[in-house]
Length: 351
Image (tube, rainbow, N blue to C red; front, side, top):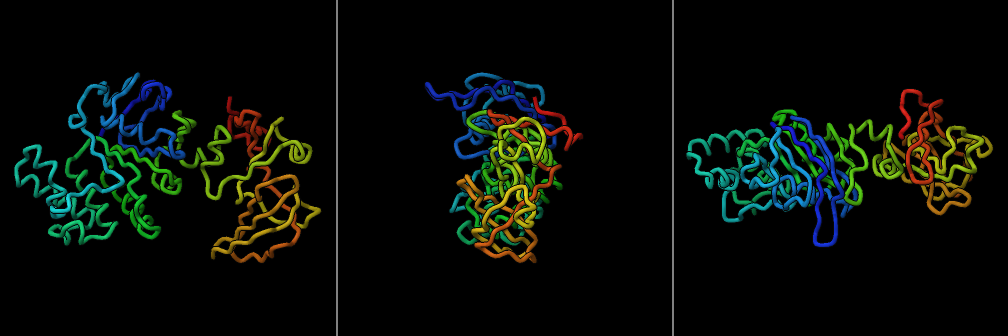
């Protein structure tokens, strides 16, 4: 295991700077997830850590040692790619042990480590198969096994589940969660899927346009986002955002430009009793949950309310919406969070 620190790390491609001074601490043994929209710099940052890209400025520090100029093979890092990158002519066992073979490890050591990793990943019965004989999930396990046998200080995962269908993604999330508990190795995981981030991470790093917006545990980011971007990126379905002006007298709170409330922190009431009122345009029934999409006056996007699956609501009917006052989020004109101290005294205001 290892601790990783990034000190003012920048990356530039000719005239374009894609990372603008990243500072980050990845604790020893933690499972840290980078999330953000496409093009935000999360995969570039991962490639800098593993040594596939060079740092333009700043320091990469592993266990107190600056590794900017250390070759990838000597950083004690193993990376699992999105594409699996398996050799089609090799068996599962040969794929998993190939890096050790290149390093000149004895055959007995290779066989022992491969067998151990295969047992962890439930691949023992597939060791003599070729990649073409495996499912997508099994191929991804082989790619993970190839990383495990190297016994690295840090695991890096670059969107490893993006090529899998929905059912396999859920299955592999469970496998990764078990692997996390069993190995305890420092892990950095890149994804655009916030469900993966929320279910796997000890620490989430939210990135946007080459900068870190916020770092914290999943519940910290969900409960206390520092700005509008994090508030709308973390949480599924996403937070509703409304102009604060028409609501200020009714809701109270700080002098904000916008008010945010999550769909699960709202409920439907009689139109005259709501904080706002509008027309139900669409109802989605998903079993345990029902989503109501509501058109509000002078608002282009639909307001989303999350309801219990048993609730009966009909499209094209008028309804009121009331908000949980203790769960409101307030943002200034620049999108920075203004925490309502009176409503949520346990949270400090974001400066």
